[in-house]
Picture (tube, rainbow, N blue to C red):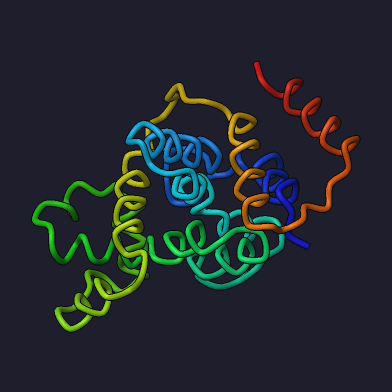
Length: 198
């Protein structure tokens, strides 16, 4: 069952791992979310920025195969609304879109993003552009993509993961979903986080 604690535990266990970038998964997630918050993004979009690469963590933890832009929304959908999962599902297409419509965007991508772009199909073809722009949530996905691109700075100082727990829980609560977590579990989780932080 997907719970907020299960999501956060993925970062506890696998956040130090690297995928295609110089920064670890947790650092990248925190930087992306911090950029979204600094730009005044709504709470669900900040959550999407934080969780956009959860699919990579699922692959590391459970060996789940499949594109991370599909595995992450499928994992998160029982818990979070489409305002969180839709931009995540589209953030790879948003990179392909920006490569097609914005001169200089491709050249500014990190080496890891350029490598993954080849695996993801390269820039969108002309016929695909209108389809992308007609997809609900495409503009949020483009915004997420830009924060994603900016969230790859080694040793950046940004708020820690514990600071996002109230946001995630409030989004779940607003949706009316139940989180299967006892107060004692929450206290234990917070205690582990305090010990882990320098």
